[in-house]
Image 1 (cartoon, helix red, strand yellow):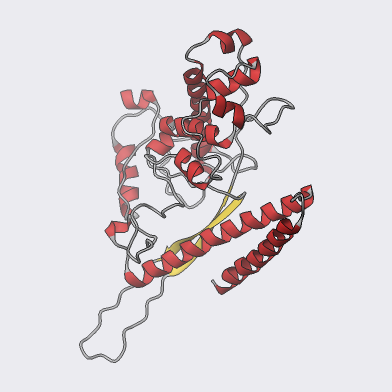
Image 2 (cartoon, rainbow, N blue to C red; image 1 turned 90 degrees about the vertical axis):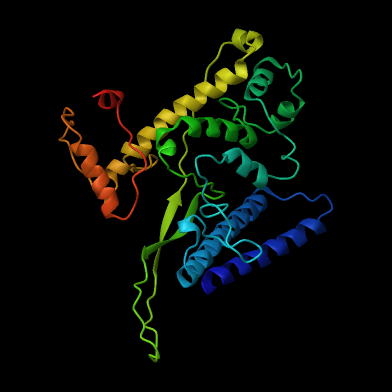
Length: 321
């Protein structure tokens, strides 16, 4: 912990030195290299801060116990326990990525509420920015070589649309917003073992919790949508069409990768290719469903690991059978 804190403090000193240099420049214009270096330092500081907060929370959890049945982990500003799972780190399915982006964005970007992807792409293609002042402002600085990129405040809404229809997220998978390309979080590998204590006994037997870590690596899933100019000019429901089309396409691939991803970069690793999981196989290509045994065995496996089964993802033909 001390090493992480010292590293963050050293980065903060460097960042302040660069800020002083920035303020001393008459035109306040960094070179591209300087700006990139400052951005990298800020991103690294953010990642270190998240890691330190998580380690602190797990340390407190190990000492004081986990209240609320494990639903609360991070202490709030008043010293109590904040609600939510790893507050500001993990998002449950009912929470929105758009809210996180809005919270973390620059104050000048927080004013762009309810941005329309339809108005944005219509303005890009046709030059018609009628009733789209905010969208026009967001178009400044976007890439033009090979197509425009949807700005983060708008893209977050599309991501939420994909999350709403993703089966793995409906089944309980959480979303972890990342400000850097990698993010390391602490995890509990082994719980402490309690030992009964006799009255007036001299010492309480120490039972330490074993902490490990897991590293998240961001992967990119781009999508290009081609629409006719006539559609951009005439369609009244363009925003809904674009959001639904992109969101639906992303959700299908997200589910496939979450379940069967190979793990070979840039594709993430899915459950099927993750070692250490309990598997009850139905054969190489599966088998016709004859009874409830596969479900009962899967439920038993989850219960044996002290978890409560809450969802099953299956093909429609299996549900029908």
